[in-house]
Figure (spheres, rainbow, N blue to C red):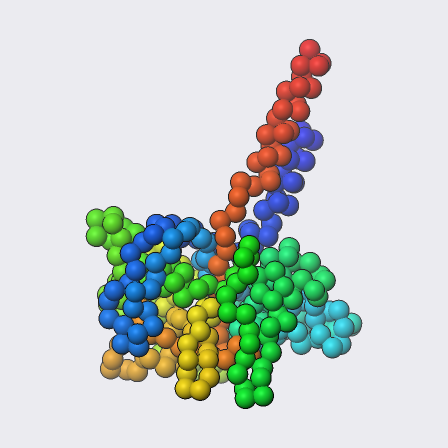
Length: 337
């Protein structure tokens, strides 16, 4: 391979490494019609219109992606050895590592890298977005701002909280808004002859997915396995997707959004998507996350999972490099001849 080609390819890979680690789907149809179907709780009625293109993860954040994040900080000191470790995932403590802190590795099991990250807090998710926004550096400060200002992550004496409501202007990665989430899960730009429309369920249908393990059901929800085995099912194990091609929106975890609702005397963050012990599913009603089904959680409660949203990247640096290199080599040939 010519040296100049190798250099250019190396630069291309380096410039795209961050985005390549999360498989994003672009959500188009800006200015789509809002959802106007049934909305018993009143939250999603008239919602779901998004006036811009954005990207969202094809999968929830995987163990392989989260273990890189955890190890960046858990290996820095004993105080950080349990930094952002979830309740269930496909990683384990690495017995060959002697410190400082603790290092994690993928378990020696099939598709451990694609195991969902179960049991993190909304604030953990926000810090992860900050880390991505800041280029995944090893400086702990990279987790503190960028997409969300963590200095606002405080509680008052009455138990209420003060967390920044929505992402900062210019955020590159963030927790999806409710509008972004339900559009990516339930809106179909091909419906109604291409004018677009909404499905009640996030499998591109008005018929609920079937709860059950892979090969039995079409969604990881509404059932249990021994030793919480439902949480061990790798992402992408079910063929059903949203109209945009998102996997596991009809199962695995309840995913965080930025939306805030009042629950009694306290505000909570809305979660969307079914989870393995779906509170809305009982044998007999056959429902797994209709568009208006909602969950909710406190920002510091170990509860849900994360599907990352992102801005549409501008033309890659690699393209500019290729153009510049083309001019350089052309100029060089002219000088030689």
